[in-house]
Amino acid sequence: MLVRACVDPLIARYTAVPVPYTPEDARRYVDAGRSATALPMAAVEAGGEGAVLGAVGLHAVSRARRRGEIGYWTAPWARGRGVATEALALLSHWALESLGLRRLDLYAEPENDASHGVAERAGFERGELVRSGIALRGRRYDVIRFTLKP
Image (cartoon, rainbow, N blue to C red; front, side):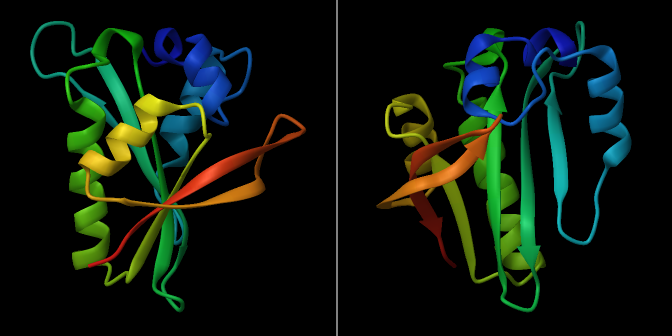
């Protein structure tokens, strides 16, 4: 299911998943688990097939600076159901409360309106345009920074 989700053109376009995404990539993602600076998580539907609905993860966490970044994606079959908003809100609030972070940043490309809506519904405030703010597959993209503070 993870491979089936990550070969979606929108996930490939807006995230850093490898292209093409293979079963080996899925194994590496699952095996990577958490570290001192990252906490990747996947949301799985209970019952039925146990379909992967999406993923949300913390990265670039600095306990010294009390900040981090967060990102997410939603499988095509789970879009429009509030899955990303709920997962983003849950992990964000956990990071602020349990890890003691004072700021979470989220970056989305200007034309990714669906992602902007998810961020705002989860409580993030839209910030400035960051020119060449992210690099994906050797190309730099402008992004809008969204921020959540306690």
